[in-house]
Amino acid sequence: MRRIFIISLACLGMMVSVVWAGSSITSPNHATQQGFVPTSTYLPIPSDFTYTFDTVQMTADPIVYDDQTVDGFTFTDFTYTTRYPLGLDFTVKITPPPDFTEDIVSVSLMYRFAAGSQGRARAQEIDDGRWQAVPYDTRGLAPWMTMDVVWRVAYGETGVAETTPVHVQYIDPTRTWSRIESEDVIVYWYDFPDEFGEVLADAFVSVRDRFIQGFGDLLPFKPTVIIFPPGDAMGEFQAGGQINPRTTGQANGETYSAVLRVRGLEIEDIRTECIWNEPRDLEWQMRYAASVATHEVAHLYQYAYGSRGPAWWIEGEATFFELEMGPVDERLRHLVTVLDQDLATLQGQGPSGQVGTPALDGCTHLGYDMGASFINWLVTTHGGYATHLKIVELTAANTILDQAIERATGVPFSELEYQWRQYLGLTTEAYVPPTLGYQPPPSPTPFGQ
Image 1 (cartoon, helix red, strand yellow):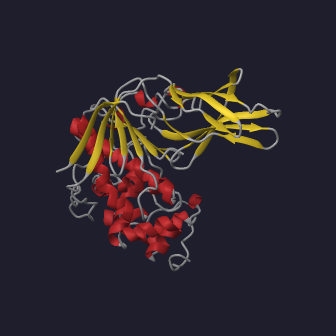
Image 2 (cartoon, rainbow, N blue to C red):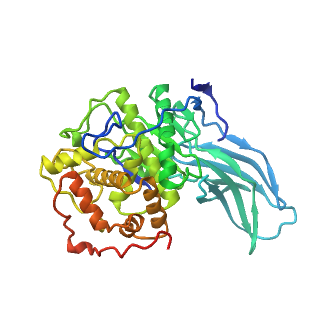
Image 3 (cartoon, one colour):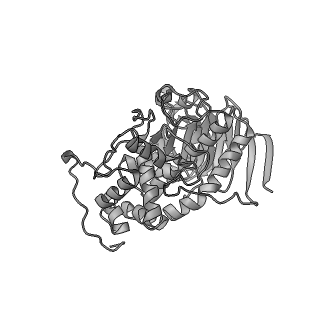
């Protein structure tokens, strides 16, 4: 039986964006679609799988850090106060050594996220010897992100005094959040029941092995997922304080995090004519959020391991790795055999994500589903996840995607696309517009050369 550790109302201590508006179709299971190659299946949740659950309720009171002395400079009254969503307010009193005769050139607050990305906020002297720096004062950082920060004083021509790092978390004091942490992920959410966190934790342990097989390893850092309820709250930390109404999720390679909002119970205007719509209830919302979360974290794997390519590959790959890819093959075959819709070529740049353009079935995200279908077909029929891993390794080494796919499979990409189209019911080769400038891939060469 699963062990759940519960801490109620815990006052925690200081602890590129790819946009996805959600696939247009979902499926509650991963059973093989009739007449199609199988989609992914998952192992049962391990009996010894554990996670921690907390309720996070924090205030905007200043947090005070220990004084430090570095190269004769003293750093006292070192405080942090959250201004969420308008940044992190740091102040410090800096006193030079008694015999200091040089000029202070600059004072900066340096911050570093766990993934290794860094930033700097230039400090201003607010009174005699007291300095203030406010990173993200114009928004841009999601709540609950963590970083290590140091004060840095540059003086004279080459002098530098830098404090020891302290760990900081971007606190949202405006509401109570729930938090769950497992071996795979840290998730924050509010306005949804505790069960929501369990669904997310289960989702990530379910896809763990697929991520390892497809990318060669887990992420070098545990990802954080921040989940907002339906509505506009997800926009509060965005630049300008607004969010595109069609955006459901974002991945951030600097903070190794994903931010998303739960879909509402009402079907969005752009999707009302979609023939694949499912009835929506709380269970659907939680399941769908789990798919969006795993989709966005798949983008973090792309950042970490160098999977590159045009939009259909990037979004199709993330859709392929999400918890519920859905009956994408069934959708595509219905489009081409029943509604007589052709599919754009995958060669060259291929189709866009087609996020805001409904296809003949009334559903959006055709480019996502084409990419996911092709990758699923390729992995199933041409060497399994090892083939996908080879493609990732080749694109990470700056091989063009078309060539990487050919080198990994030994089959020209144009031939693979033709086979996939036949599988979906299209008997014609893809039309490649001359403007794409597509050139047939070179002859296969051994992988790794």
